[in-house]
Length: 274
Image 1 (cartoon, rainbow, N blue to C red):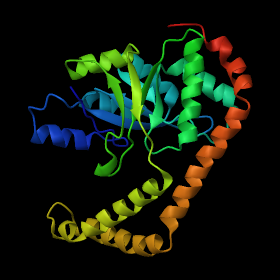
Image 2 (cartoon, rainbow, N blue to C red; image 1 turned 90 degrees about the vertical axis):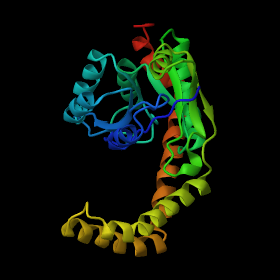
Image 3 (tube, rainbow, N blue to C red; image 1 turned 120 degrees about the horizontal axis):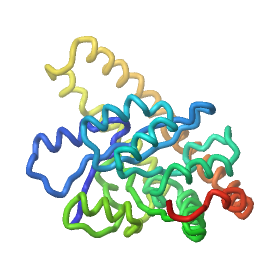
Protein backbone atom coordinates (compact mmCIF):
# COMPACT_ATOMS: atom_id res chain seq x y z
CA UNK A 1 0.00 0.00 0.00
CA UNK A 2 1.19 3.58 -0.72
CA UNK A 3 1.02 6.43 1.77
CA UNK A 4 1.12 10.16 1.07
CA UNK A 5 1.84 13.27 3.09
CA UNK A 6 2.34 17.00 2.53
CA UNK A 7 5.36 18.62 4.13
CA UNK A 8 4.68 22.33 3.65
CA UNK A 9 7.09 24.77 5.24
CA UNK A 10 6.08 25.45 8.86
CA UNK A 11 2.44 24.73 8.10
CA UNK A 12 0.00 21.81 8.25
CA UNK A 13 -2.91 23.79 6.80
CA UNK A 14 -2.87 21.89 3.49
CA UNK A 15 -2.89 18.52 5.24
CA UNK A 16 -5.73 19.55 7.55
CA UNK A 17 -7.72 20.94 4.62
CA UNK A 18 -7.42 17.62 2.78
CA UNK A 19 -8.44 15.62 5.84
CA UNK A 20 -11.38 17.95 6.41
CA UNK A 21 -12.53 17.40 2.81
CA UNK A 22 -11.86 13.65 2.92
CA UNK A 23 -12.14 12.49 6.56
CA UNK A 24 -12.19 8.81 5.58
CA UNK A 25 -8.69 8.81 4.06
CA UNK A 26 -6.64 5.87 5.34
CA UNK A 27 -3.51 6.36 3.24
CA UNK A 28 -2.60 9.89 4.30
CA UNK A 29 -0.77 11.30 7.32
CA UNK A 30 0.11 14.83 8.40
CA UNK A 31 3.64 16.04 7.75
CA UNK A 32 5.59 19.29 7.99
CA UNK A 33 8.98 20.68 7.01
CA UNK A 34 10.17 22.75 9.94
CA UNK A 35 12.79 25.46 9.45
CA UNK A 36 14.94 25.70 12.55
CA UNK A 37 18.26 27.36 13.43
CA UNK A 38 21.44 27.01 15.40
CA UNK A 39 21.08 30.12 17.59
CA UNK A 40 24.78 30.96 17.76
CA UNK A 41 25.37 31.00 13.98
CA UNK A 42 21.92 31.41 12.44
CA UNK A 43 22.59 28.23 10.44
CA UNK A 44 19.28 26.99 8.98
CA UNK A 45 18.23 23.35 9.14
CA UNK A 46 15.14 21.84 7.56
CA UNK A 47 13.59 19.10 9.66
CA UNK A 48 10.91 16.74 8.38
CA UNK A 49 8.29 15.78 10.96
CA UNK A 50 5.71 13.10 10.21
CA UNK A 51 2.55 11.90 11.90
CA UNK A 52 2.10 14.99 14.07
CA UNK A 53 -1.13 16.53 15.33
CA UNK A 54 -2.29 20.14 15.67
CA UNK A 55 -1.16 20.55 19.28
CA UNK A 56 2.32 19.28 18.42
CA UNK A 57 2.46 21.60 15.42
CA UNK A 58 1.66 24.60 17.60
CA UNK A 59 4.39 23.70 20.09
CA UNK A 60 6.88 23.11 17.27
CA UNK A 61 6.20 26.60 15.94
CA UNK A 62 6.96 28.04 19.37
CA UNK A 63 10.30 26.21 19.59
CA UNK A 64 11.56 26.14 16.02
CA UNK A 65 13.77 29.23 16.29
CA UNK A 66 16.22 27.21 18.36
CA UNK A 67 17.15 23.70 17.25
CA UNK A 68 18.47 22.95 20.75
CA UNK A 69 14.95 23.45 22.12
CA UNK A 70 13.08 21.92 19.20
CA UNK A 71 14.82 18.54 19.02
CA UNK A 72 14.46 17.68 22.74
CA UNK A 73 10.72 18.39 22.42
CA UNK A 74 10.42 16.13 19.35
CA UNK A 75 12.24 13.37 21.24
CA UNK A 76 10.12 13.83 24.37
CA UNK A 77 7.02 13.30 22.21
CA UNK A 78 8.57 10.25 20.54
CA UNK A 79 7.88 11.89 17.22
CA UNK A 80 9.29 10.63 13.95
CA UNK A 81 11.54 13.30 12.48
CA UNK A 82 14.64 13.61 10.34
CA UNK A 83 17.02 16.10 8.79
CA UNK A 84 16.38 17.06 5.16
CA UNK A 85 18.94 17.90 2.43
CA UNK A 86 21.83 17.99 4.90
CA UNK A 87 24.15 20.39 3.09
CA UNK A 88 21.76 22.60 1.11
CA UNK A 89 21.77 25.39 3.69
CA UNK A 90 25.27 24.79 5.07
CA UNK A 91 26.90 28.23 5.12
CA UNK A 92 30.30 27.24 6.52
CA UNK A 93 29.83 29.46 9.58
CA UNK A 94 30.48 26.29 11.52
CA UNK A 95 33.35 23.85 10.96
CA UNK A 96 32.02 20.95 8.87
CA UNK A 97 33.09 18.33 11.42
CA UNK A 98 31.38 20.16 14.28
CA UNK A 99 28.26 20.82 12.19
CA UNK A 100 27.89 17.16 11.19
CA UNK A 101 28.76 15.88 14.66
CA UNK A 102 25.99 17.96 16.23
CA UNK A 103 23.43 16.77 13.70
CA UNK A 104 24.47 13.15 14.21
CA UNK A 105 23.87 13.58 17.92
CA UNK A 106 20.40 14.98 17.26
CA UNK A 107 19.05 12.85 14.39
CA UNK A 108 18.63 9.20 13.48
CA UNK A 109 16.70 9.74 10.22
CA UNK A 110 18.39 11.32 7.19
CA UNK A 111 17.06 12.31 3.80
CA UNK A 112 19.68 10.84 1.47
CA UNK A 113 17.75 11.34 -1.78
CA UNK A 114 15.95 14.60 -2.53
CA UNK A 115 14.23 15.08 -5.87
CA UNK A 116 15.15 18.78 -6.16
CA UNK A 117 18.78 18.56 -5.04
CA UNK A 118 21.85 18.14 -7.23
CA UNK A 119 22.85 14.51 -7.69
CA UNK A 120 26.30 15.20 -6.22
CA UNK A 121 24.68 16.56 -3.05
CA UNK A 122 22.53 13.45 -2.62
CA UNK A 123 25.46 11.11 -3.19
CA UNK A 124 27.57 12.98 -0.65
CA UNK A 125 24.85 12.75 2.00
CA UNK A 126 24.34 9.07 1.29
CA UNK A 127 28.09 8.42 1.54
CA UNK A 128 28.25 10.22 4.87
CA UNK A 129 25.22 8.46 6.36
CA UNK A 130 26.53 5.09 5.15
CA UNK A 131 29.80 5.84 6.94
CA UNK A 132 27.87 6.70 10.11
CA UNK A 133 25.98 3.43 9.81
CA UNK A 134 29.21 1.55 9.25
CA UNK A 135 30.48 2.74 12.63
CA UNK A 136 27.60 1.10 14.47
CA UNK A 137 25.04 3.89 14.62
CA UNK A 138 21.39 3.08 14.01
CA UNK A 139 20.20 5.34 11.18
CA UNK A 140 17.32 5.42 8.72
CA UNK A 141 17.75 6.61 5.13
CA UNK A 142 14.75 8.16 3.41
CA UNK A 143 13.86 9.98 0.19
CA UNK A 144 11.45 12.75 -0.72
CA UNK A 145 10.39 14.31 -4.01
CA UNK A 146 10.51 17.92 -2.75
CA UNK A 147 7.98 18.47 -5.54
CA UNK A 148 6.30 21.83 -6.01
CA UNK A 149 4.33 20.77 -9.10
CA UNK A 150 2.23 17.63 -9.64
CA UNK A 151 4.54 16.38 -12.40
CA UNK A 152 7.27 15.42 -9.93
CA UNK A 153 5.21 14.18 -6.99
CA UNK A 154 6.60 10.86 -5.64
CA UNK A 155 9.32 10.61 -8.30
CA UNK A 156 11.53 10.23 -5.23
CA UNK A 157 10.03 8.45 -2.24
CA UNK A 158 10.69 6.23 0.75
CA UNK A 159 10.05 2.50 0.54
CA UNK A 160 8.99 0.64 3.68
CA UNK A 161 6.37 -1.80 4.94
CA UNK A 162 3.19 -1.11 6.90
CA UNK A 163 -0.50 -1.94 6.90
CA UNK A 164 -1.28 1.48 8.41
CA UNK A 165 0.45 4.90 8.30
CA UNK A 166 1.55 4.41 11.91
CA UNK A 167 3.13 1.04 11.15
CA UNK A 168 4.78 2.48 8.05
CA UNK A 169 6.32 5.34 10.06
CA UNK A 170 7.45 3.04 12.87
CA UNK A 171 9.27 0.87 10.34
CA UNK A 172 11.04 4.01 9.12
CA UNK A 173 12.03 4.78 12.71
CA UNK A 174 13.41 1.24 12.97
CA UNK A 175 15.50 1.71 9.82
CA UNK A 176 13.51 -0.79 7.77
CA UNK A 177 13.31 1.49 4.75
CA UNK A 178 15.24 2.87 1.80
CA UNK A 179 15.08 5.80 -0.61
CA UNK A 180 14.07 5.26 -4.24
CA UNK A 181 13.80 7.36 -7.38
CA UNK A 182 15.82 9.92 -9.33
CA UNK A 183 16.46 13.64 -8.97
CA UNK A 184 15.08 16.24 -11.34
CA UNK A 185 17.52 17.41 -13.95
CA UNK A 186 18.53 21.04 -13.70
CA UNK A 187 16.39 22.17 -16.64
CA UNK A 188 13.37 20.43 -15.08
CA UNK A 189 14.00 22.29 -11.83
CA UNK A 190 14.11 25.64 -13.63
CA UNK A 191 10.99 24.76 -15.63
CA UNK A 192 9.17 24.02 -12.38
CA UNK A 193 10.03 27.50 -11.07
CA UNK A 194 8.45 29.10 -14.12
CA UNK A 195 5.42 26.81 -13.99
CA UNK A 196 4.83 27.93 -10.41
CA UNK A 197 5.12 31.57 -11.50
CA UNK A 198 2.56 31.00 -14.27
CA UNK A 199 0.22 29.19 -11.87
CA UNK A 200 0.49 32.11 -9.46
CA UNK A 201 -0.46 34.56 -12.21
CA UNK A 202 -3.32 32.37 -13.48
CA UNK A 203 -5.01 32.48 -10.07
CA UNK A 204 -5.24 36.29 -10.18
CA UNK A 205 -8.88 36.49 -11.30
CA UNK A 206 -10.22 33.95 -8.81
CA UNK A 207 -8.28 35.55 -5.96
CA UNK A 208 -9.55 39.00 -6.91
CA UNK A 209 -13.17 37.78 -6.92
CA UNK A 210 -12.79 35.76 -3.72
CA UNK A 211 -14.62 36.93 -0.63
CA UNK A 212 -11.98 35.33 1.61
CA UNK A 213 -9.50 38.18 1.05
CA UNK A 214 -9.77 41.76 2.25
CA UNK A 215 -9.20 44.74 -0.04
CA UNK A 216 -5.74 45.14 1.51
CA UNK A 217 -4.92 41.45 0.86
CA UNK A 218 -5.97 41.84 -2.78
CA UNK A 219 -3.85 44.98 -3.17
CA UNK A 220 -0.79 43.21 -1.78
CA UNK A 221 -1.39 40.19 -4.04
CA UNK A 222 -1.76 42.43 -7.09
CA UNK A 223 1.47 44.26 -6.26
CA UNK A 224 3.27 40.96 -5.86
CA UNK A 225 1.98 39.64 -9.16
CA UNK A 226 2.94 42.81 -11.03
CA UNK A 227 6.42 42.77 -9.49
CA UNK A 228 6.96 39.11 -10.41
CA UNK A 229 6.40 39.69 -14.13
CA UNK A 230 9.58 41.68 -14.91
CA UNK A 231 11.54 39.45 -12.52
CA UNK A 232 10.44 36.35 -14.45
CA UNK A 233 11.08 37.95 -17.85
CA UNK A 234 14.55 39.08 -16.80
CA UNK A 235 15.50 35.51 -15.90
CA UNK A 236 15.92 36.21 -12.19
CA UNK A 237 14.30 32.92 -11.03
CA UNK A 238 16.63 30.94 -13.31
CA UNK A 239 19.64 32.91 -12.06
CA UNK A 240 18.78 32.34 -8.40
CA UNK A 241 18.12 28.64 -9.01
CA UNK A 242 21.42 28.33 -10.87
CA UNK A 243 23.37 29.93 -8.03
CA UNK A 244 21.74 27.71 -5.43
CA UNK A 245 22.39 24.61 -7.53
CA UNK A 246 26.02 25.62 -8.03
CA UNK A 247 26.42 26.27 -4.32
CA UNK A 248 25.17 22.76 -3.52
CA UNK A 249 27.77 21.26 -5.82
CA UNK A 250 30.66 23.43 -4.60
CA UNK A 251 29.90 22.84 -0.92
CA UNK A 252 29.53 19.09 -1.27
CA UNK A 253 32.58 18.79 -3.53
CA UNK A 254 34.59 20.66 -0.91
CA UNK A 255 33.37 18.28 1.77
CA UNK A 256 34.05 15.24 -0.41
CA UNK A 257 37.68 16.32 -0.85
CA UNK A 258 38.20 16.06 2.91
CA UNK A 259 35.73 13.27 3.54
CA UNK A 260 38.14 10.95 5.35
CA UNK A 261 39.20 13.76 7.67
CA UNK A 262 35.55 14.61 8.32
CA UNK A 263 34.73 11.01 9.27
CA UNK A 264 37.77 10.92 11.57
CA UNK A 265 36.58 14.11 13.28
CA UNK A 266 33.09 12.79 13.95
CA UNK A 267 34.15 9.23 14.84
CA UNK A 268 34.27 9.87 18.63
CA UNK A 269 30.55 10.62 18.54
CA UNK A 270 29.70 7.40 16.71
CA UNK A 271 29.17 5.33 19.83
CA UNK A 272 26.67 2.88 18.40
CA UNK A 273 22.94 2.64 18.72
CA UNK A 274 21.41 4.94 21.31
